[in-house]
Length: 143
Picture 1 (tube, rainbow, N blue to C red):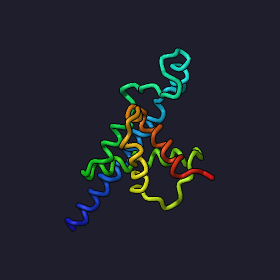
Picture 2: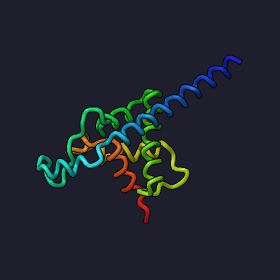
Picture 3: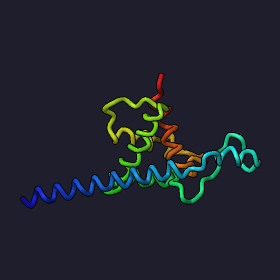
């Protein structure tokens, strides 16, 4: 009986972590400025081909990747939920065609691929959402 209660509590915690990650993903998605890049480009403060550095309240790629590379179960769950939210966005908006049955672990592997983790550019300052969308489009194009 005690083992069943422990499993139920673990499942409840896991569900709550997934819900929290989804809420954060939605917050990040809807809090992005609509045309900040275009506005800054018009003002001339951002070089052509570069993205503007995002405000502090946006989850940056470098921070999200750091979380996704942690081994603690709570961070693994958080990362899985976050990346799952990003993946659902690209599928719903038909930006990428992620095959049915693709595991969260595979999605996280795409998000934390060497081209994201080992970079010398400004990708760490990009919103994690933008990086995830770009990576999913690259890895799962809709032919």
